[in-house]
Image 1: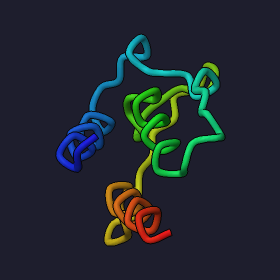
Image 2: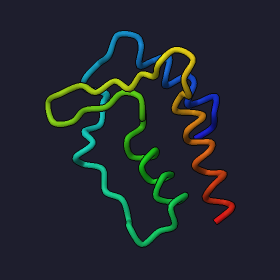
Image 3: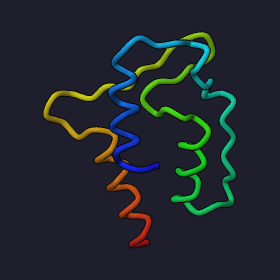
Image 4: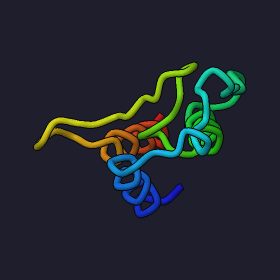
Length: 85
């Protein structure tokens, strides 16, 4: 997933949400034997939108404080740290 795709997903999460298009996080299965970067990729592929998803019957929308780090920054830093390890 590119940074541009993450930006688009973030913007989409602020708009009207169609529950039928959301993934329930309880259905996401991650292969724990994979390296951290590949586990993160698996998660992003399965959840489709890390900013907006279901947890059972509840819609979860992630938002960050104004002026704080956004998900894109956190993910970028995470992947950089994985490459260094």
